[in-house]
Length: 258
Image 1 (cartoon, rainbow, N blue to C red):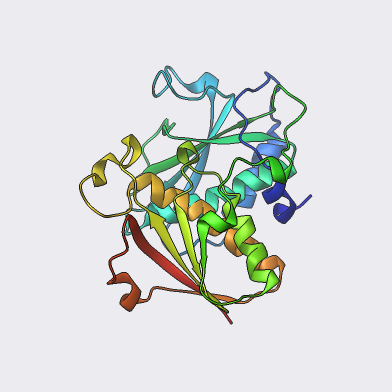
Image 2: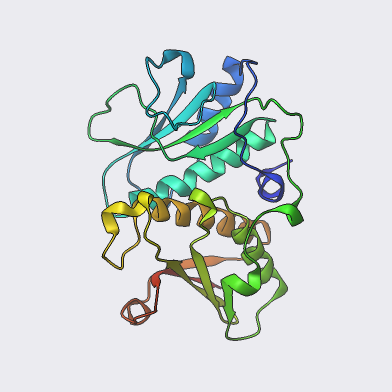
């Protein structure tokens, strides 16, 4: 199984066994993460934290798992998008290694890293159940019809990319992404909803912190499958679209297929 295959079978695991993840496998995860290409050149780093190292959990609602991988980042515009983008690839890599994992809303951190902030944590370990995979058709996701506005007929390959994008996980399964599809380009929007995870943006028509992470996770699926299908892409932000008012949606970016 590779990352492409993992997109279609991964599911969030919330119950873990006490089986230890070996040092070799943890090192492989960190090496995989270190070799990823982020969306920009800003510095990021990763730490694996064992539950036994924590004096207390971040909150009563934090998912309890034997291990957490936390991403740290320099502070810059849309650093949350990049965090979701790379962490989704790490989650898929964990699936290829037989591990279960789940994105969590709380941040698990033990240390302060100069000039960097903890952004997001991924709970992981060996699942209690042997059934760590999910059949694609059983994914609780909105349909392509509900997510996409098809303006022009496009190719089967681009539709397959959109199908992979819709399978991405999101906070509270909110699935904020929406797509306007033309023959060789896709304009991506984020549906704006008020909620506890986007509290800082309530009252403003802006993409909140967790939805920026969600959009990064989706974009990871989008670009992984594009690459698998040998589709060359270019990410662009079109100001003429950004300036338009779209009810309950905020323009995110556009993808051109070259």
